[in-house]
Image 1 (cartoon, helix red, strand yellow):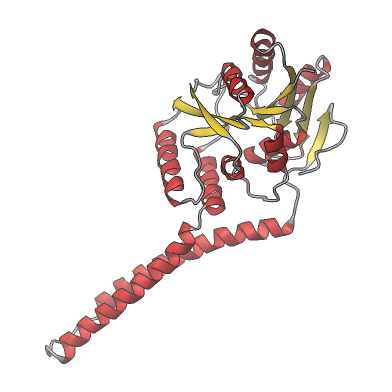
Image 2 (cartoon, rainbow, N blue to C red):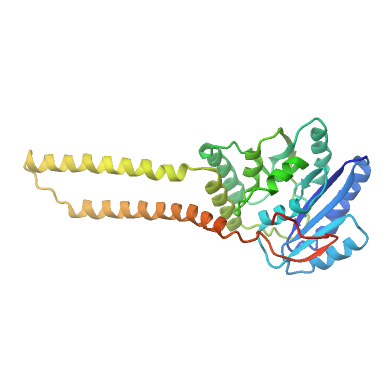
Length: 317
């Protein structure tokens, strides 16, 4: 019996691209992966254009195509998670509809999977986009791996193949603030990279703005590193030690050298520095606490408004 590969495509206002994306994936499976069944899983993050109508049109002639439409935009990571929870294939591939990650890399993923690897992730040798975003991602990955207790592959995204047992372990995780690249790395299993060159966007403008990269970076840091929390204690100790040394120095000037100390300016500067540092670290603590609060509420990651060819909503949402 042939194995089935699910290709999960999260979309938001991608009516210009989804038809081409589906066609290229289907042609790829016909020409290069004819021994494998194909299941398409499309998750629509409450698009404001006619994306859902296009999806419904595609699904009419494709009984093996599943689709979910959310009640509002729940974010990119949650959209991927919902697709993973819906997919039923022996392996699952995540693919964006803009085709910046070319579907033609999928056969290389499958080849590594056949060799026994459970996770095959894409590593970008070259990427397009603004200089600011490229610089931000370059610095982000280096800092994250320096501070994290978990080794997260550099220059990788969400373009990857996951074996069924990895998907089962991933969708069973209870976390609400998702950073899937980190969670996949955390799970372990046999993992291997596939290097590829990222392409320009197929058409239209990216819906993922710089602000979204910043939010994703905050989620990654709070989920996979305790370094900021530990830095609070270290910096507090250093400031306390420095204050003691400074106090001893000025006391020595006053009592031993007989030199009067004009402390108003020094005091104001010191207070501003200390208050600034205090508020920065209160913000860091607030980020960690907000994530604990989100997890404690146990709200669903997404709310499903409509489905196509899905008998019941996924269990882990």
